[in-house]
Length: 219
Image (tube, rainbow, N blue to C red):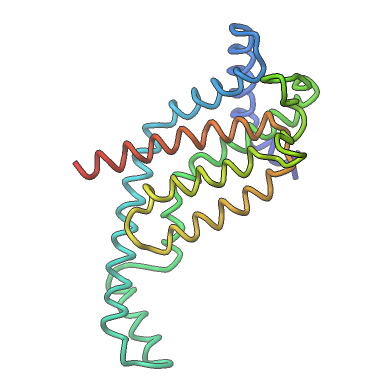
């Protein structure tokens, strides 16, 4: 599986490799270079993220409108009648439940970069056998609190905060986003700190991006 991903993402892995070792050559810190790499790639994606968030807002409003119409017009119906009436509303509004996936469009834009970073760190894991901040071996899980890996848990809580701005209006997208974040927390819990630090930095960046996008939308 990793071989197939590596082949498909070769250009992005190469980009991550070039950027990381260029930064490392400048500042000579493996841990700090990971943080700067994550921020640099996140900033580079801002134009795409802005377009994705606009699309997410559009589809969220559409979902809310369609759901309100379904509730209003099928409240007294049951069984097949309710199903057919719901399908008619969907058709009239050019909507399908699969459109809900578009509420996570910005995540899917970031996903190839995350996967490329994961593969880059995995390929070079022996080079990350370094101590960062006098406590974290970058090639191992962080084990910051009595052998508990703290960074993946922090990532989940950061994603929770991000969801408050990403889904400031009530809709099912927030629950799906948090469920996905929880799954990711479990998946990366035992992964090396080089990857989780990269992901933590990216998640922090997304909070500021979401907050700024939210404030601009209100204005």
